[in-house]
Length: 185
Image (cartoon, rainbow, N blue to C red; front, side):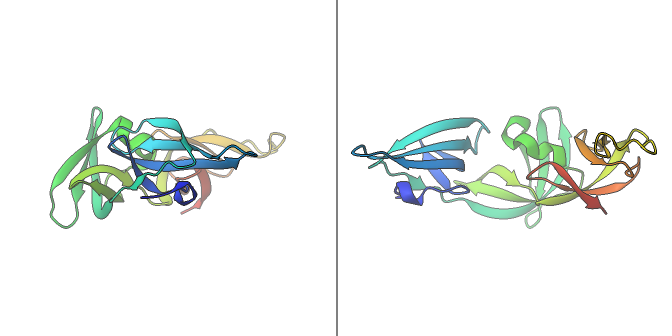
């Protein structure tokens, strides 16, 4: 069981019988009142994000989440299909469970699968991925009054801000945590 001081960002906990990931937390203590922990939790089964406040004596159980490797295959409607790299079993996860991860998934992407109670519940994508630019407006020489940036569209439909020299067909390294341009590949 975890006490208030052990609940941190990135920790996986069981809350109301379901696994959650702690996205953010704020610990506060005021005068005679007990300690309070305000958290933002992401449900690993549904993808829903909730705000939850824990009081001083509250305890939560740590979620036993195991990890395995898989490869992204394709998506069909709202379902995204993956293949376990060891057993070659295929499984799918819903678009709403994956959240922003769908913007970084291209065929063949290696992902880390989170397993809970012997079933796949979510994926973790690499911090940096390489994506191809499908649409980039031309950079006009001398157009640096706005800081020298432009918005380009990547192969997954994600739009990011890049320097003016990026053009259609370029491969870019993108930070998946911030959704931002890192460099050309």
